[in-house]
Amino acid sequence: MIFVTQLIYIKEGSEAVFHEFEQRALPLIKKYNGRLLLRLRPQKADFIEVNTEPPYELHLVSFETEADFRRFLEDEERKQFLHLKEQSIRSAVLIQGKQL
Image 1 (cartoon, rainbow, N blue to C red):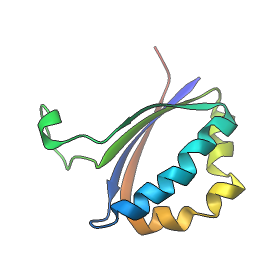
Image 2 (image 1 turned 30 degrees about the vertical axis):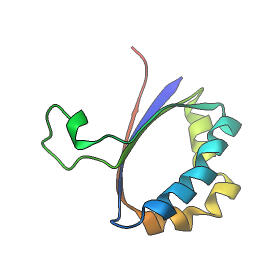
Image 3 (image 1 turned 90 degrees about the horizontal axis):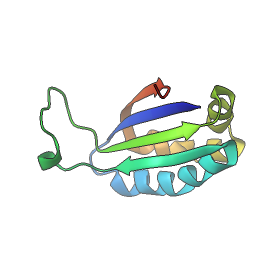
Image 4 (image 1 turned 90 degrees about the vertical axis):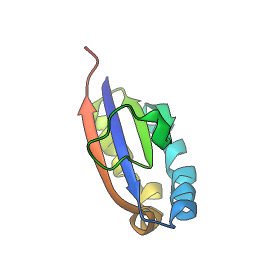
């Protein structure tokens, strides 16, 4: 099993477009043996220490295998609405790991 954590930074004023992208993309995770374990939209008060720009949203997702994760990224249905991601996400940090 692999775990993927994503810190998402959106373009100012693009919240609605980002939410539309998520409504379409997140359900596809299950199709590839994945689970959305955590989706968090932190507020300033939630941070104990910040030495960088706080993300708009954080996701923690698990997939049975690396191949499942790669298939999710290459999903043809997902590719049809990637323009929403490009319109709304300024940058993202993807951290991949495994349970210890």
